[in-house]
Image (cartoon, one colour):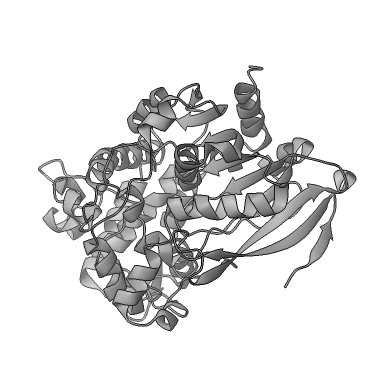
Length: 443
C-alpha cells in the first residue's frame, strides 16, 4: 500500500520495492522493502538531492518521524530524505518468531537470514537508488550499524554515493567478533564504575536486586524470565546520553512490599521488559555477531565465550551477596552491568526468541561468511566522507574506529566526548550540521 501524508511542515510518502532475496540470483525469490520519503512541505516540488538514512541495529527499522525533530530538521534544508526499513525490519518483510516459520525448518530459516547482512542491505539501496534517482548518486547517513553498512557501501558500490556521513558507526575492518567483545567488556566495566561515581547508592541497589534474583524467580509481564544475567544487560542504557540517569531512576524504585515479602515491583518490571524485549527486533539477537563475521569462520557465541575471560562480570563468583549488598566483596569484586552483547541463555529467557532458538544456534555455527569490506577500495576512496567518533563509545570501539578512519582515503573525523553513541539523536541538528561542514570542507 502506497500513501502520502502530511504533518506540520512535512510531506511523507510511502515507497515499496521488490528486491531479490539473493542479489546474486535476480530471477529467484523476491522480498518487499519499505522506505518512507520525507520532504519539507515548502520544498515538496523542488529538485532536491536524496539522503538515505540507515538505522542502527542490526534489526531496527528507521524511526517514525513526528515533525522536524532532531537531525531531520537540518537534513530537510538540503535533502529529500529516505528513511529505509532495512530488510527484515519494520515494514520490510519483517523476520520475527511469527513470520520466520513460514520459511520452513530452522535450517531453512538460517539460510534465509544469511541474506540479511550489510552486503545485502547495500544492494537493496542500489536497487532503490536506481528506481528513485535516475541512477544519480545520493548521500548516506549511517548511524551505528548503519555506519557499518555505509562502509560496506563505500567498499562495494562507491559509484552510488555522492557523500557519506557516519555517526558512531566506523567498524573495525578486520576485527572479528572475538576482538570486538574483548574490547567491549572493559568499556562496559568503565561505564558501570562511572555510573556508580555519579550515583554512589546505585551499586547497593543493583546488588540487592541481583541477590533477590539469585533467590527468587521473577517473570516479567511479557513473559521474560528476569535472571541476574538479564538484569545485568540493563547496562545497555549506559551507552546513551541520558542512559545513566534513566538507570538510576529505574533502580531507586525496584521493590514493592508484598504479603510474601519484598518483590520486584510491577512498575519496575514493566520498564525492564521494555528495555530488554526483542519482540520488535529479533534480528538484533539472531544476527548481532554475524555482522562481524567475514573470515569464513563461525562466531560460536563470541560474547559468551569472551565473557569467560572477564570473571569480574560473573555474579556467581560473588560471595554472600545478601549480607554485603552495600559494600564490595572482600576480594574487591563489584556488581557490573553489561549490554550490547547476545548470549545463548537469551533464547530461553526472552519469549520473542524462544521459538527461534535452533535458528539462532545454526547462525552461530554457520561458516562461510563473506568479506564485508574492501580495504583496497577504501584506500583509494574518492567519495567525501565524514564520521563522528564518540570517545569511549560503549557500542563501537573507539580504537577500531580510528584505525578504520585512517584506512579510508579522505575521511574526515570529529572525535568528541560531548555525546554518547546516540549523539545524532541527542545532538540532532548540531551533530548533522558539524558533519555536513566537515564533508563539504567548510569546517
